[in-house]
Length: 259
Image 1 (cartoon, one colour):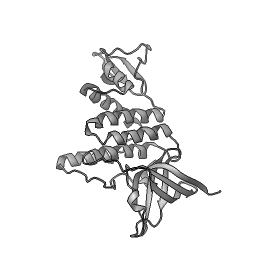
Image 2 (cartoon, rainbow, N blue to C red):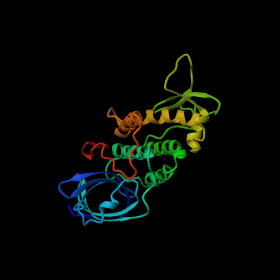
Image 3 (cartoon, helix red, strand yellow):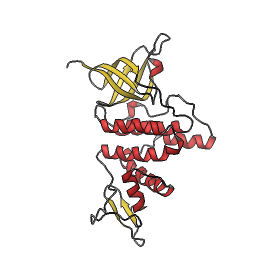
């Protein structure tokens, strides 16, 4: 099998951990090659100029060579300033990264999702946009995985949704008229579904209802293993400890256990 070489690929670091004495194992999200596993050799030395770049939320241009599941990083340069995501918002950034680690297969390209990811990081620099940005990213992630939500029409009749009506959203099917005597699925207003479809999400009710719907939908594909970022955020809230800006996410699941 010949060695594959890729040059100057737009990428973001999703996860990294030490490897041997001076190297690092990376999981990166790239525009044209999807999730890629890399070995960054010798970057944990005092003379390395690359180590300072290999942090989450910073746009990069990377090159690699190799074959198989794990290839070797050959060069790395910054493609812009690091995202200014700080304090509690770091946890939302790590949450998005963990979704990609858990749900994307290696070498499965999602260029549109890559652009949505970059836009999400930019939006997360503003705490007022946090919840809206997360819901929109979750929607696009489900669409890219082939599990797009039905947000404009009823699943059973095909009729357009009415903003003022209440629906019962049945996962992997879609919204149906809500029956209070036979409640099934997730109760949600038509206005919330339409707001998610148009990506407006400018009121508390639509944000609350779509969060419930999207988290339930993602849970179908995440399996029983809990998200470490969500667990840690809960612990941080209890202790009122804020993560430090620029810190790496060592608590995310190891790439060895991700697929």
